[in-house]
Length: 364
Image 1 (cartoon, one colour):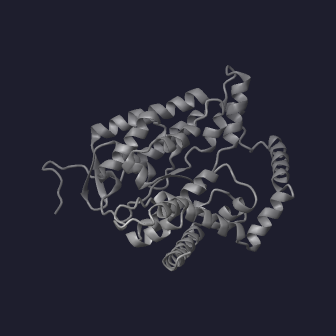
Image 2 (cartoon, rainbow, N blue to C red):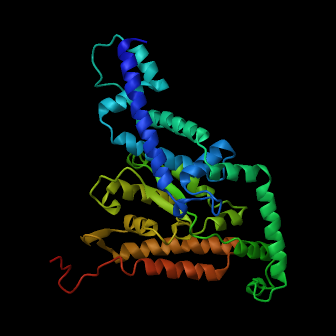
Image 3 (cartoon, rainbow, N blue to C red):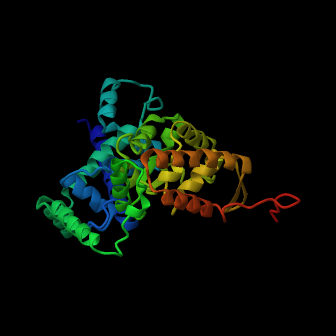
């Protein structure tokens, strides 16, 4: 290795180490309100990543990967071009390019530095750090899993269910199901009610700025479509009200997301193929408001307050609630839950808009 290559590699290592540590710190700060493992005994998202790397990936592994890559891409975007070039030069793509253009005299202006290659390499390093990270909670979780802890929990739940059958206050759902329904549908509906998840276990749907600006829809649609499997209503039900929309890469942009044309266009394109927002998005954070404001015409009249065009809002609501009705009708979900979704969505917008007075908006 020539001396200049050694210097660049050493600098890239320092940059990468700093980014990896920043990502670990960020994942460590994501506590129980952002974890997907429920009452696992783990303390934060970083520990969730570690146990999956060291033991077994969960159903939500792709969500963790998207979160990590989004964090890393954000840190890389904050670097100047020279720093990104140093990191890129250590990737397979960068190393190959530099080898092929070793004798070029044009400089570095036209070097095709790609953030994706840098993020992939950094993510490999982050996962390596997760494989080596240890603490008592992680060790206990893995030991319980290896000892068949999950099977024991299932047995305990079965015993608890049997006890509930003898308890008149157990909240049986038999009265909620019509005798005219097929037996298979009654069974599915009862099971789904029993498996209703808490909204404290969010599932993150991350859309990167690069996806928005290149209108790359397929990866987002692949994930969204997976939430509505035709033959497995229990999968859709398990994700009801748990989706949290994250559009990354705009933290330094002074505009609200609904003021960014590319973001609005991206969500509108998704909506053409997948309109089930109100069923899956949670009602705790800003996810539903972001989607509604982007899909309908929205005007920020004062900082922190916006008015959504009534006609645009009506069109969004009609389509979105029709999609919710479709799921309830086709899957046989309890109608009371449909009403709860409607009431919750309506409440979200009560204090979100300023209506114009007789003389228009007063911004004084």
